Length: 224
Image (tube, rainbow, N blue to C red):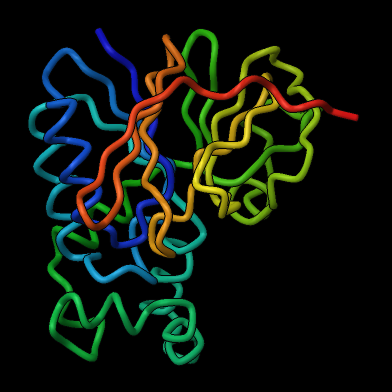
């Protein structure tokens, strides 16, 4: 069984499809997506449709990102709607061919609402943004899970490696501290969408224009 983690997608449906074309996710695979499926990039609708299709043929674990948090808030608090548009909501609505959240399909809202705050495997755990290192995952504040920047994180009390997104690495390559790895590689901004084979540390990266590259996760950065 293969175990993969994919960083922030942000409406980059073409890059997501390219990764799937290369890796052919199937019934024996677990695919953990780290949140931020919506906003900024051009293809939010196509991203969610593809994730729903993946859910039918592999074990898909979809984390919630801060952009899903904002989109749900824009739906439930109409006073927040205009502000949400400035965070990439305009591009999201354009992908649905509408100007109102009322036209987004119920199945897509169901997907967003089904996203989870964190996920654990034997040697690694997965969050969107970051954690408080001294707290177990079940006690983590949502502000940290969804919004805290990566920085230079301390090792988590669990002893497991943290895999996260949220903090865009404009270099186009994951930032690795050994005990913590950020997989947001700025897909919507002309960078790459990263998929990490969690067991082998092989990275596959796809761009919106269809380019693909494969390389090992870089050596850990110094904490000093």
